[in-house]
Length: 364
Figure 1: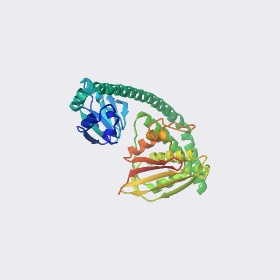
Figure 2: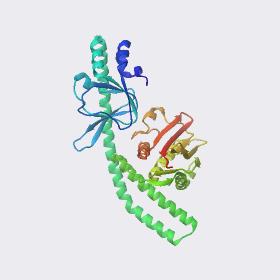
Figure 3: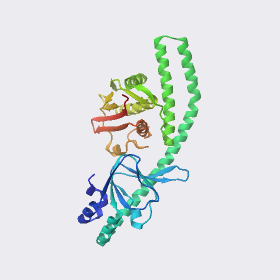
Figure 4: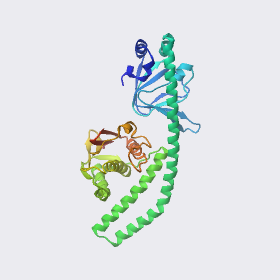
């Protein structure tokens, strides 16, 4: 976003906007970098040009709550500058961000020198901004309450499935001991794998609801992991109208195999969901080395991601067009990728399809 195109300057005359812009200090910040702390002096107004910044309130027991998030086109810190108070929250970048800081002195002087209608216009803008911030705060509270319910549900699921799954596991082991033919061994192996996956999925849901993401790193060959994923999904894909193509090369990674399987599963499930009525449905998974990463691309020839959710796709409870969708799959997927110090993004085009690109650091 270009600086003078920012919503903050809408209420100012062009000359005043240009004057303010000339005082700006640009700040390039990495993810989870502190912009200011609660109690700091209010020394300027911050404009978000790219990335996102969380307004965080610390509690007495060292925990914190995100009150709301400022996105590109938003600004924050103006109230402390206008009334002379100290910062009332922490401000922390949620991802790599580019901010424009307008110094307090320049901002106040410009308002003082501007005609009355400019100041009035800006105050109307501030009030609208406060309403918007309040709405976003309420949405965050509702989201927290939903996550609390999800956590309780996941905890109950884990408790309830352990007994039956233990019985199934013992039965599988007994069958494989009594019948040592290749076909029976393969079926028992698939059953064990599916039991482990379901248990892992419930545990991941509980972790996500708690805001944590623990991973158990081990040395893995990505090609072997993709082959195992295909083995576990072979019958599932065969029961659909989708043609699955696989292409994978050897590349070493340190990763949690079950967690990455969940990432692949979510992406595959999403593609199959959107391809239900497609006459020539196909999904392609390509995995291999790229630069210093292992790159996994999951592509489909579906209708593309709806424009109204593209900017919020990785947020919790965002879903569209799914009859039984919870809106948690992609949020969990991103949290797993980030826990591996990787990245995930998508490329989509209406009517032509979508590609998700996951990159995990490789091991030399």
